[in-house]
Image 1: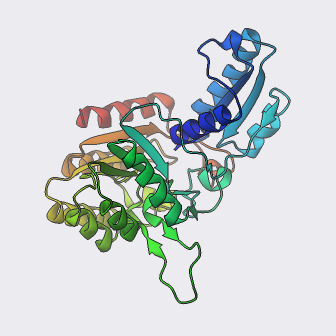
Image 2: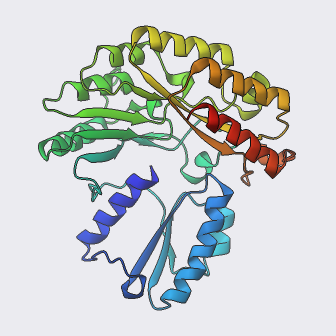
Length: 324
């Protein structure tokens, strides 16, 4: 999502007459697109701001992206401006000749206890389907072969724009079906999905499609039900396993990847072992593993971060070794 936003910010700036440079000393304007998902990423922003000031004290320095209120207060006197991250209407300046990222929704209503997205991006907002479809048709005409649909919770997409009374909104499965019917030689990918919104309708649409990728990213986060409840994920491991089984039955060639958080507050070695067992059982094609990092303002931040840094690193290595 941040990469897509950066591409659209670059396109917007070029429309205003700016041109990119690889030399910081030559830059009149520097924009840092912030991600607050992990504290380590935010710490790098603080260091980067200081570094940029020392490299070019005359350039205008701007922050945008997912920024918590507390970080805005601390950084506002160190930068020239802080731009809100909103629905960027400018088409992106794509970095790859055949690949493009298309945001279809932003924000999140789930309030997972460890996540800051609802506080930095707000509640869910779905872009109008007509604009998405037109944008993708234009990209197909220009020869793009891989189109990735983006959203913090992409499969909760619901187009409410311009609906007449009583009309049924276009949901994510129907949007995918509409895009699959666009003429041309291209592939559709999407991320990130939430298990609670991976419906039978969506699985059926993917199984019947010609252009939708058979790669599905479905974050599980933990293999223990108590930890999932503390995370406010809204599903159980039994539900997740049944969902994976259903997906593989209807889409035999599917490749499933996931996200996992290790060292969540209170996670015991036995609870972590359940995550290890789940990874072995499911056989994920890939797993993005994060060591838990408390984020101010979230529910989980109120709990004691009682798993040591070394233990988090150990658990992370174990999971990563399983999906090599």
